[in-house]
Length: 261
Image 1: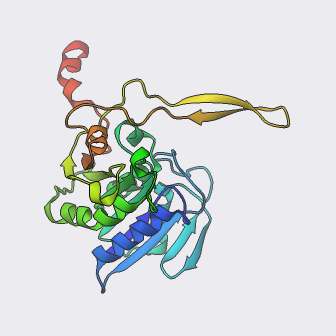
Image 2 (image 1 turned 60 degrees about the horizontal axis):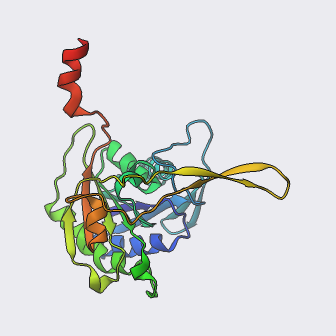
C-alpha cells in the first residue's frame, strides 16, 4: 500500500511522527509512506490553497518533503509533483495537536488536507488528538492516538463506507483527552457545535506602538449533545465522523423551492 501523509502543524511537529508510525504499520513491509507537509505551521487555514502565489517545495530526505503552503497545497504537491502521478491508496492528515471536533472542523487545516484528497478522488482520513486536563501528567500527549490510531484506521479501511461520489466521503477521527489505557472505545458521531464557543480577536500593541489583533479561541470542554463528536471525546471515546465537502443544506431544498420557484 502507498500512503501519503500531511498535517497542518508543520513538518517537524511531533504528531506527524505519530502519523508516520501509524501509516508505516498500515502500509506494511512492502508498502510506501510519503510525507509532504507544510514547512511552517498552518493551523486554522482550513481548505485554503495558494492560488495566487507559487509554493516552494524541498526534499528533506527519502520520501519526505516540506512545502511552503497549506495542507491542501501539500496534498496537491504530493499527488501531482512528488509522486508524479503514482496515486496513493490512502491519504492521512494529522495527528493534529488539539481537537478538530465540532465547529473546529470548519477551520482546520488538518481537515483541509483530507478534504483535498477526497476532492482528488482518494480515500482520506484526518486524525486529531484532543487535549485536556486529564493528560497533564502524560509523558506523551499523543499517547491515545499512538496506541489506538492504527487499529482505528484499519477499522475504517476494513469496515468503513467508501464511495466514488463527486463529493466523496472522508473521515474525521478525534482521540479523546485521556491516556491510552482510559480510552473506552470508538463511536460513530455527528459533528457537534459548542454553543457559545466562538473564535474572536484580541488587540495587542507591539513594542513599535502598532496595533495587532490575535485570534482567540473559546472553551473546548463544552458538551455538544448525545451522538456528537465533542461529547464522545469528553466521555473518553474516539469519535469517527463521516464528512463530505458538499455544504448544501439538503434538508431545506424542497421548502426553499416551494417558496422561491
